[in-house]
Image 1 (tube, rainbow, N blue to C red):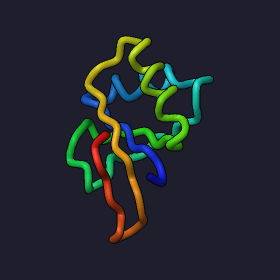
Image 2: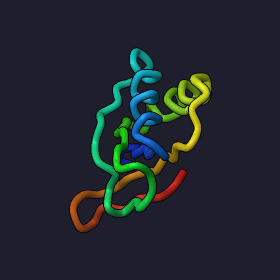
Image 3: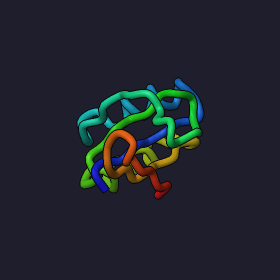
Image 4: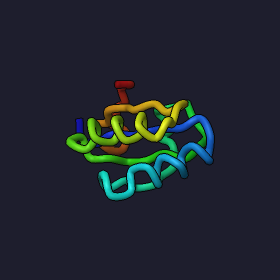
Length: 83
C-alpha cells in the first residue's frame, strides 16, 4: 500500500473528519479517485502508517459514513482496495 484514501458520505462529514484528524496525523484533502465510485466527491489522503490512528480518531469523534481504501501505483496502474 502506497497511501490510504478515505471517502465520506457527505461534504460535512469530510470537513468534520479533517478537523478530527488535526493534530493526530497529516491529511491532504483531494477529490475522490475515479477508481472509487463512492462518497461525496471529497476524500482525504493519509500515509499508511497513520491509518490506525486516523480510524481511531474518526471513531472517537463519532463520525460514520466513511470508507478507507488502500491505494497502490500511479496513473493507469493505480489500484484501490477497500480496507
